[in-house]
Image (cartoon, rainbow, N blue to C red):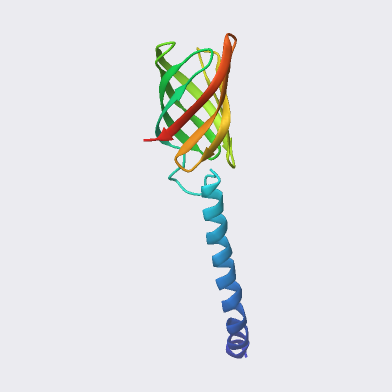
Length: 133
């Protein structure tokens, strides 16, 4: 009796299981592309090189670690010269982070291996942009 019941249900469950697997894979790829943390390998973790202009102008290098939507690491600025701690977050294509010790906040958007936006400091702000190295 149990064998007959399984023979009837298994063919019906195969398409459902297949559909669930496809949806899970698609959802994982979408979340990763949107900056989510469905994989131990993060989309934003690593080294980024960039520039900024406006109230201050120069170059920077960011070394980031991403855990879920949270970012932390260091930023090395050409002006004011130094390496500072940074924390931030990414939600979909929107990114925000701040440089501890400098008083700068950065907002913007990220897509693939590039990001850009606007920074603010008590002395003023301006545009910034970066690419993943």
